[in-house]
Length: 344
Image (tube, rainbow, N blue to C red; front, side):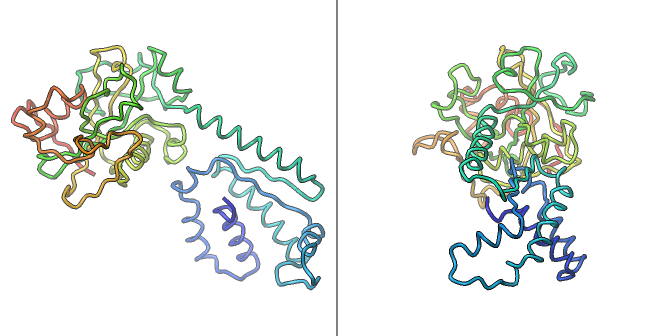
């Protein structure tokens, strides 16, 4: 991303240092530029520099004139280079990786090789997705349906490659999910997984889902101010719901989700649902369901809003979490218990 966030930070720091920009407005802009929402999607920052003499030689090599400009001047270039070095130190803890490369005496092909290799390494890491997990023995087993505050999780999340976590029976995977319903809880947005993207042994395979959400990734911990499970889950929920539906939703900080822990099969007992509820006007909601992850053919119910009465007729089509949500959250005639859920 050329001319990205870090580039802007360097320029504004330079302007302040030259008394060309006031400190108060700079602080406002700086807070905006270093928002976790922007920083969380940046894996690597390259800072390419050169000494002023080399910079000017490169600038004039393709020009007919050698007249210096207001920026392309030795003194200005040196002061800006110093600002870049200062900014690298100032923001190093805010970004995942900042690497400075002095290109003054670098052979172009060698530089291209190094940068390309680093980018390929990043892509490899990203394809080896790391997800969050808890020590299963450290989480007390309560009912299949219980408030989050009933469990005492003192340890922060740990992360490992998804395949390793999925294969380990001692690792419990928290899954933030969101039920999108109306205020009366008589209608709900539903979905069905794309069969090409869902393993046949998945509890969600060929089932109607009353929720959206997914695993907590390592980058969610970076975006979250705190590292505890509840804090990180809020950012994971926003990312997952945004990816799957195009909807922006952040739960209130005081919101405590309801947990669902289904031990009826080997796959489900490795996953702990953290269920949030979003009450909204479903008539004006315009979700954009991810067509790669969810079924989208014309005759499917996926991506549509269904009345509770209709869902009651097709309860067998729901997977285990959906059945619990239907009975305990939605305003159905078969509702077995009332739980006061505060909606963010």
